[in-house]
Amino acid sequence: MVCSLVRRAGQRAAFTLIELLVVIAIIAVLIGLLLPAVQKVREAANRIRCANNLKQIGLAIHNYHDTNALFPSGHIELKDASGKYQYYSGWTLALLPYLEQGNLFQGYLDNPTANQDPKNQNFCKTYLPVFTCPTDIRANQIYAPETIAPDGSSQPTPPILYMAGSYKAMSGIGVGPGSSTSTECYAGFYNEVQDAKAAHPGGRGAFHGDGSSGLKPDKIASVTDGLSNTIFVGERHTKTHFTRGPFWADTFNLYSMGASYPGITNAYLQPDYDLCASQIDANYCKYGWGSLHAGGINWLFGDGSVRNLTTDINLTVFMDLSTIAGGEAVPDF
Image (cartoon, rainbow, N blue to C red; front, top):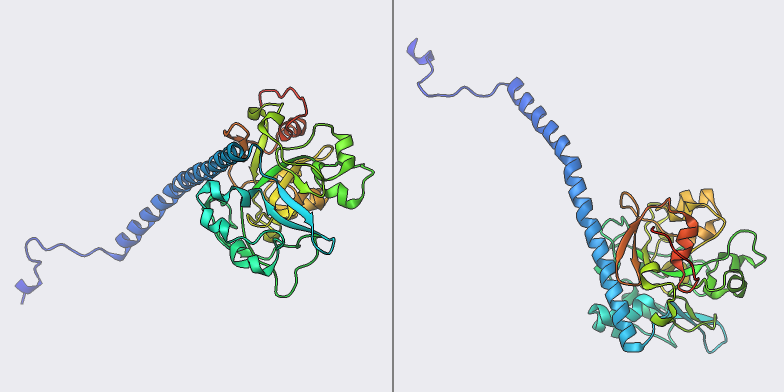
């Protein structure tokens, strides 16, 4: 009986509870140390993928221009049979054949079918990675936009749904505070309001409406400020009020295009719609920008390059970069 109590040679003792707790604690500490590094690597990869999306979009814009001798319209807004303006195609839709999405493009019902027509619902709810930044928390999500074209009315029942997007095209300089324009013009783009044209000669961006504004799409030759000094497309993320973010297939200007504005703060460059609206007039936030990347916003320039600009950029410089023919001498930004 005594011998049976003697531990056999080579037999290991089991871990005690304290030893197990120590091992678990060590593992937890190591995970805690590694997690920030993993998150940084993941964010770096997402930022690269986001920039690559913009580069693909830039290449598509130039291929479109090579084929059509002009840029795509930011959005096409024309009168329907009843004399009411409707939104039809737009810059993202026009680029689909140049992004290897020709089959999808064929499924879109254009004029006389309006963009928001229920017949286009299946098309508008399609997920496209090229129009989605991986860092965007709205990615691959379907929402009912806050308002519906053509006049910004409330959603019908059942609501019109769209797949979220992450990018907007640059329209140019919008009307700033103190303007004598109406509320609609006050919120609108340079390219869609006559008063803004008078206030900011040469202040249009590379993309603008085609129809009610009377402005036709521009050409590379029109970008006299230089392609490397002109913003074409930028990121727009929001971590609040998801129904105010962009939707890649929604051609209503509120959700497909952005602008720059004189006389206000940089609030419309932050990725938080509600915070922006608490600091400045919400109309500017509707046409704003923002990115969830640490450090700044990715922008596609006319020469096809993608650059990251901080959200505290000098707004005069930002306005200079937003126009194609303002004649500004843009410093080293």
